[in-house]
Length: 187
Image 1 (tube, one colour):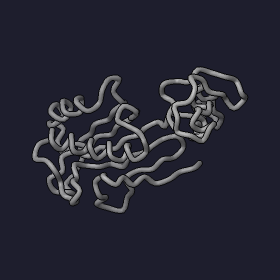
Image 2: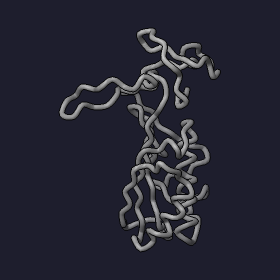
Image 3: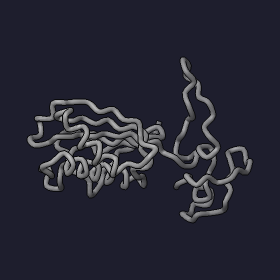
């Protein structure tokens, strides 16, 4: 499986031995990040401010790979105090839109970074043409995979032609069959 590290120029500087994220196996994994500013210090005094800054940092990493918050499928959130959940949830709803990603929110000891009240990590499914490495859906209890959706198998016009143009309204699958080009196809 091909993989590569993601380093966002405008992302929060890592405070430990970790990368901003990784692209691997058709997914983008964004490391757990908090409300860290460019100087490496915590930004914001309220859970709302810290939630927005944390999501800004996640967006920077996603943007470095041509992705956005609307593509995120799973979010893990760590709060220093679970009593902050209602306020955090209101700020979260302003940044993510329905259908919301799957989410787990837990209480955690975040005292290793003084003042930090929240940490979030995300997973994003890489959409696009088959060249981006989709294997399809795992079949329960086996190492075999169901065929991916046609837009995962198809080569978009950009890949076919080596150009970044929008291309025609249809694509060819590996077998040469023409199918409609989905709106989610990205290069």
